[in-house]
Length: 250
View 1 (cartoon, rainbow, N blue to C red):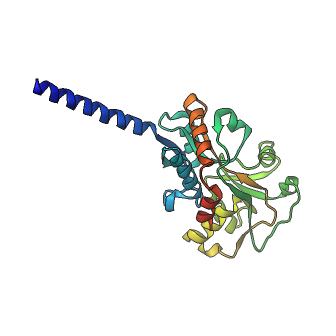
View 2: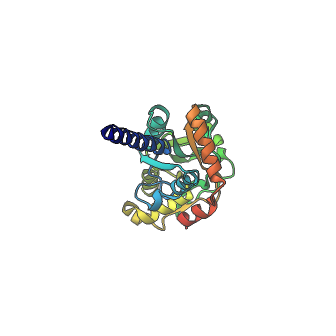
View 3: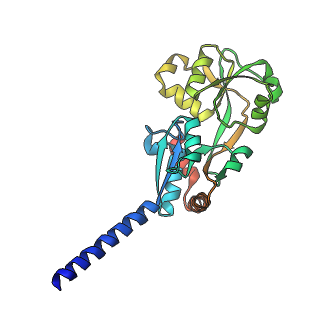
């Protein structure tokens, strides 16, 4: 009888531990992202400003966030097709993406515009004024609706590359006239990348900003994705997003 009691007690304890582990695992959210400092990067404190916001918001709701970093196009595809991930971030809003993913509430913002050479500043008033210039863009990045429409129609001359760093190198080497980029990303790269050391003081942000772009998490368009978007949005209301962003972007 004692042996039976001991076996039963051990079995119950194991069941409780297993249930606890399963419950804990259910509280883990896995997202994909890209190396896009100072917003997201595996090498930055708290993995960047946007990662810190996301982690704080989920943490406020009792969830733990895990982020895997990939090149941008792969990060988006894996978030859509890989069952291990429930979404990706940070993303700008775009109608075509909203058909595929569930957008969270805004989790901060960033100033989108153009990097230019200081010895060749460009003055423009409308997107059409940019038609004469060679503009560096990153593959599969959402920019502004108007800009992307002009690109899709072949009304702008764009040079497509894999990331912002390569665009800035092309700009410094006079292979393009402008590079569409977030100002905080531009400043971070100019001050942290050794390959851009010679470009310091030779590249600046264009005086006319395209848009102050809000940043979002894109969740899978599924029941679980819908649920996690609501969890995340509730968590955002419990934290000071602006303070977290400011701490990482100063």
